[in-house]
Length: 252
Image (cartoon, rainbow, N blue to C red; front, side, top):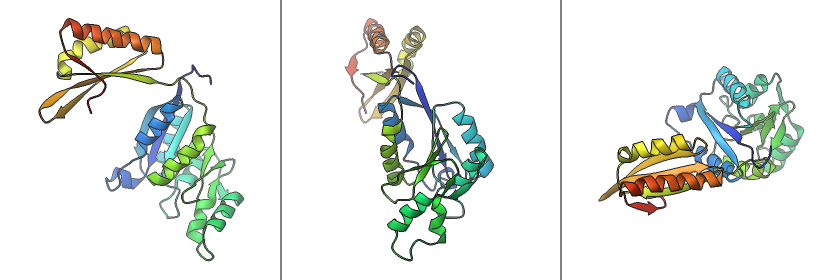
């Protein structure tokens, strides 16, 4: 990978509690933002249940499509924490008690607290490497291009911060934003024309509604800064022809 390459990632959120609505995911936006800072673009995200074959199929599919796969959830001490075993089976291996993981948790827990359930958190696929967990100690792991982490946001996000320096990014995607005080349907033809003229730039329109005001934020994203600025100039010119007032920035 080089600084000009497009480096991609996928995020797999594993857990019945997410799909049931009991728990709300807070990790995707964090991960996408942090990866974007180093030039890794999240190309796809999925939420899947705690079902072994679903985990196996999803991991194998996405690991073949993108440079990095990240997962959250299912590596705790309970019966439904099946992510480690499932990913081990996906790569044709089994889990084992990693001696370093055992040592980490023995040091973390008070005498008598490192019970059999917690010992389950030391099991990782053979051939994997541990990922540091600075919050609750129980490590995640990496196998092939798959990074497996806890689902609890505070833990997962701390783990991401630890592993970011080990990742190799590519071209960083930048954005340009302007806002107009009209609905997105009013400017849809112009936006389509700009998108067709600049295929390497992502042209998005995002309506907002506030008391006494509504409009659309136009967001352009791309890694080629010259083309990005040219696309912004094209949008601006088309809006000025129609005498549509333009505000700079995002009207959140």
